[in-house]
Length: 453
Image (cartoon, rainbow, N blue to C red):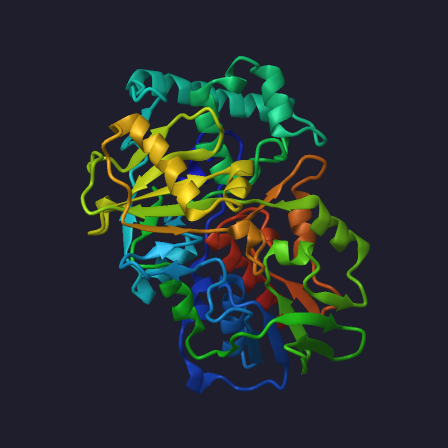
């Protein structure tokens, strides 16, 4: 799914930024040429941003310690293989692979990729009738026009939904439009349209190329970057004291001293005050944390003994009355031996699913599928799900600009403090926020800041 490029193709005047291959130097293994420089850096969080920073700093002679709260590295790049298929709970795609740093990393790490063709899709209404190709094409064209209209009419204080409903009152309750608003826009941004900024929802950047999905687990990339690093797993940071010359980090009740700290935990962790900073973070930083939202997208994998859907399709769309409710299905049979469909919950409905039992989720998904394929289709034999909003290691999926704020908050989130505390993560990369490559590039950016001191 071209989570970024779909919208970017509809907007004009946005320059593309191109990636320089030198950044990939952070992944070269050349330990024999590393000379210690006497400086210690603690990286809080072993997601891709923290690992990218740690790798580059380690190669420049810093003593680097990565403190990771979970039982393995990767952060939101987590892969569940418990039912015999690689279910990526978080990141799945490389968005815009041309010039994207993750493309080369995936190749080096042994991650396999598959081009998921966005035009291989059929969308069904609640009565099981497929929308015609002409209706879909016309509606998507009108939707693209609507995105531009909302952006032009939007203000800092108004949500996307407020402006959209005022401009397009008829479409606001149209099932096909609700499908596009959730499966395209809310998937793209991570936020419900009722909270999404009408002015800044689309002012990020994108690499070129058709999106590819990693088929054997995105964790291969983070495992690859982590090789050779000093990583302390199951070590949760709860305090960072930067009031003295050295920085004191509290984790699991013990203290570690460092010259610099790279804070690479997700925005949701900062918003929930899971780490106590001493002294308190500057007001401008606190305001940026408060005024930037953490979105929520949940994923659900269902597997059957035999497929009952058209396995030649890449995607299956559905237009329920409830926005964001299991309306988009990825056919994983296209790139795995498994007879599986992955579906999603977007926007506020993603949060609703987290209070539902597995059986409730399966029943609701099956109601949608039965509307398309009939009541005789069987229940799945295996099921996996995510609850990103409740996950204490992220409290959400990825960051987005909300009404009442601006995209400048992403820049403020990236600001270092006293040349001691540095911040990385997708929420600190304004141009590539909400993406794996954005997180990776933010880690390189912060490593360079420390190296250049």
